[in-house]
Amino acid sequence: MTRSYKIFLNSISSRNKYCEGIWGGSMANNYLLGIQLTAAKSKIQFSHQGSCILDRINCFDLAEVENANLSQINVMEVSSFCGPNGLIWGYDVFPCKKEILNFRIQNKNIPIYNLNSLSYAFQNLLGTIEKPRFPFLPGSHLPCASKNIIAKGECIIYTAEGLGIPEDRQRQACLLMEDVGKIPLNIFSVEEYKKEILKKVIKSIITIGMNQRINFKEIFVGIKVIKVERGEIGCAMAVSPYFHLAKNAIPQYQDNLSLNIYEWENEVKNNFLYKNGSF
Image (cartoon, rainbow, N blue to C red; front, side, top):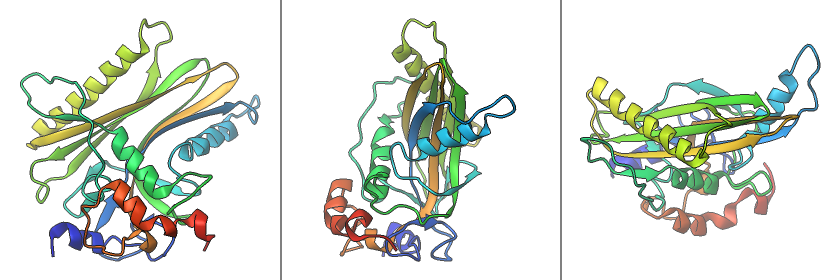
């Protein structure tokens, strides 16, 4: 039995149809990590002179379900490492196709890939708010590597994330770096500014690796941007949950973790929640 397979077997939810936070299923200290970048906005409608909290909550919750279905969860922000007891969804298990990005890092020969593929793989697991597949059990307490920004318009807000994969996964942890902020409205090119943000995310991963004596063999980076107009409020967030997998999301031949994300989808599609009702 391989190391990855042992970790996978100890990362199973107590529920058939729902994923759970890492304390909800197996008591073993193993887990899966999902990656998600998301952003959403709404009209300002609940604020008054004394408070804008309700509008902030509303746009935060909208962002949670804009892509992958991260609805009705209790997010618990934790530090940003995936250690030897963890597997990354869409990378270690049911891998997605990697898209190389054209970044050159001085004196470093580290391939840089698009994080969007991992984010898409996680959406493939959870489904959307309209068509949930294996979402989290409502009310789950979910530790997440997460950062977010909430801002009123007129502005451009962004969320960016980098994932560094170390050469030695059995002795060192994968590193997640999240960044959120605003892009100036008066710049010439938003696309060029986004590239500069991603370069800084990449360099931050390499720098922390040097500080902690970790060699990274590859890095994934991604960014999501949203323009918030006057009268609107927006939220951009990076949210990467540590979780246990719904039992019905396990293919019949569960030891074959090398199925790609599309093959996995085909194997379990008849078990999707939206096809089979709730609880």
